[in-house]
Amino acid sequence: MNFPAGPLWLIGCGNMGGAMLRRWIAAGLNPATVTVITRSGQGAPEGVRSLTALPDEEAPATVMLALKPQQIDAAQALLAPMRGKPQLLLSILAGVDYAALSQRFAADTIVRAMPNLPVAIGKGVTSLYTAEASEEAIAAAEAFAAPLGHYEWIADEAHFDAVTALAGSGPGFVFRFADALARAGAALGLPGDQAARLAIATLEGSAIMAAEADVSPGILADRVASPGGSTREGLNVLDRDDALVALLTATLAASERRNAEMAAAAR
Image 1 (cartoon, helix red, strand yellow):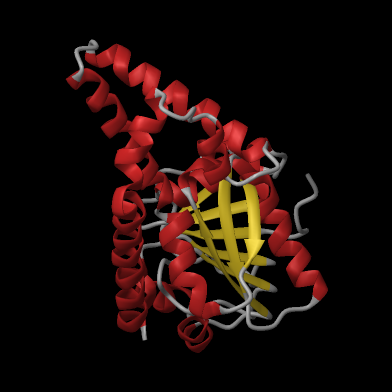
Image 2 (spheres, rainbow, N blue to C red):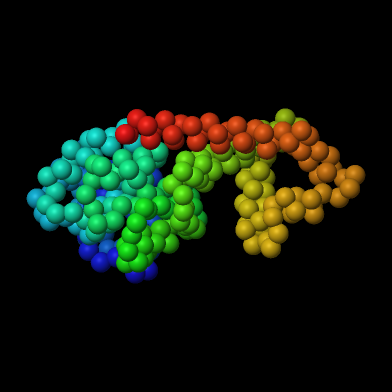
């Protein structure tokens, strides 16, 4: 994988930032070109320079903000003494919009990125947004996104909170569904550990099949449900009054509202 030339400074290295960095290194990023700056000075992968304060150096090619959105002011204070400005600023601060970022940070190009946790295994989803960027900057952002899995540019930033709710938070909702499926199996008498294994394997195979299919998941569901059969009987429960759609719509709406609240707080 050809990563953009020049050093990368990672501000914060929590669960998501650390997962992204480890995936990049596995995909060929030279750890010697990376500096992680955290309050503890810990958590960086082997071979990566780890600091607790900004180095007295010229701005790197790329800076990534990998903090909680509530830490945006601390990040601004940390980067204020930086000499020059990076070519690319990547932000994974949930809910912090482009305007808030551009008011606080100087960079040739600012890109919002919203990854989800499966980026750790190269099977994630990363949503990208920028107000304006050169082809070179877009290529640089995509070079960082590609090793993480599927990525898409979002044309309208107004949709970013919805995308974050769907794809960014989505793994948490899928994990909860997997747990519920397993618990339902256990309620029918299966041993709990066996029900869990069966549920996860079923989700894995179904997801791969859906990704490779040339029809929608809704059509796939109908194809596996024979009229009068057991799958159809179960789907009738999920489909009644669009109960499952209503539940997930409420779930995503709650997540979207929280993203909007965090954006307002960051302003």
